[in-house]
Length: 158
Image (tube, rainbow, N blue to C red):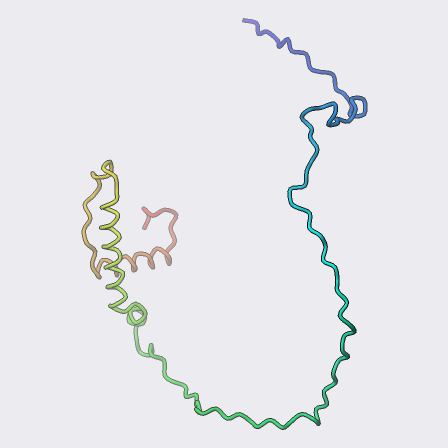
């Protein structure tokens, strides 16, 4: 099987000067550019008179200012750390109080309920949602911390 070569012949290369620069008269595609914004007139300065000379202040002529004493006297007393004698877990649990964990549980269950109501019929065959509790949230946080500390290549390796 022999392949046919293309019968197209390329145009000869024309140099810009030979061709002549295009103009609006010779080429209907070229139009005169118009300004896209309205021209604004420049502001003219108004003569108001000479500027006053800078006033020199003499420190000796200024009135004496009384010293300010605040109505409350604040004293700094160093306090003991609230985390002394606590384990790492107890210290962490002081940051995430039971009230915060309860808020996370309520928000998670509420989000799941709203997501189940709005999903399409094609997704109805997904797993059933089981309400989470505080233990589940603590386990999830522990898993996140573990995965952050021991970095693996894939999630399946954890």
